[in-house]
Image (cartoon, rainbow, N blue to C red; front, side):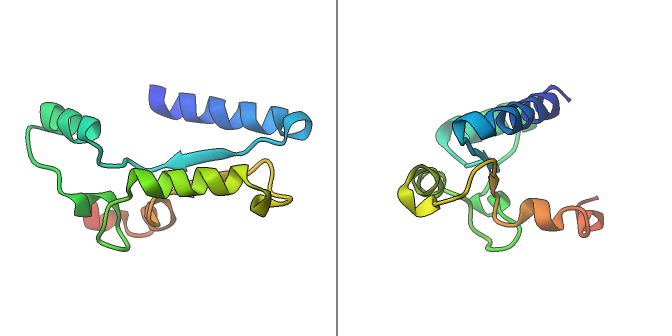
Length: 104
């Protein structure tokens, strides 16, 4: 619950200041870094495989995937893009609603 409130707060802040500052947001899905995997094991008590990071590609996102998106939004190539929340999740948020019955 707290995580969702923080995310909504960050998106609201981005939308509020975007006209003055021209900012964007990046919302990555869990990237299986050592810290995430060890936390997953500590709280869930089982293994986490890289394939659990994405529903579409059967591969997990990497730190480099998030870094490339960040560099793009900070570059001149982004052009007129502002006030955008770039979601980096391998399609997770696009299909989780329609396919949620699979995961129950």
